[in-house]
Image 1 (cartoon, one colour):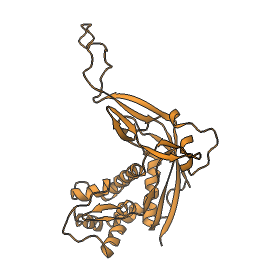
Image 2: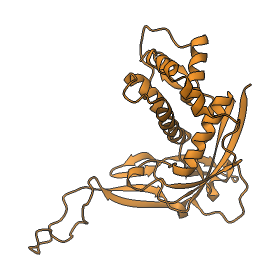
Image 3: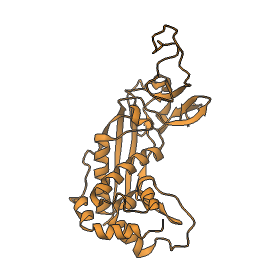
Image 4: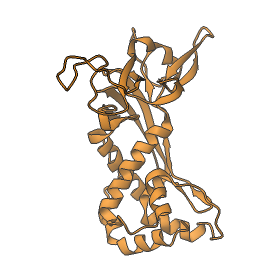
Length: 280
């Protein structure tokens, strides 16, 4: 039986959110999307792309699958890349994955069934659809799915500009001289600027599984539950950016009464054989 289900997602930034688009000099600008307003004017609204959001979910799913199958260090590099980052189409003389072989691979590896990937010369389609992550601001109203009471903040209220250097632990220019001779030697390091969305900004998005199996549904439900607990948005998560508080509607994450870990783990040898035999 195939399953189609949708989750609406609302997030609130708990730290600055960065998602770079154009770079002007030493300033990384937010990725923006043109949005036509009700009066016909056009506004540029900062948006976290669905591709970026999907990538976060994919990485969470790969970590969970790796814990179950224990394949670290056992897979060809191209296959590991496909599981974690989506892979890349490469020229190869190997047969593409189709038919019964593809069906068996989906049954054994829900990560590929849900998120898809490129293995060898042909892509494998996933059953997951992901929306852009849109800030709940006045200029984004035409693309917001939810109904929100007035007044909404303007995009200018939630955008900020941060400065940083390309190395850690660097004092500001003109700071104290560490040698203590009182000369106040300036830092030689370049200063950079980064546009961010401020903590407290609210966002909406959605994910949908389309004609997936019960195993796909249970796996994705677990991925979404883990995203609620530990997920992030955008880049620079290693330096404190990207933290979000997330709520899902509906709140029930796992649909079918199915322990995907037990099902996948019971066929570990088959799954590893199928993965290692893929054209990489």
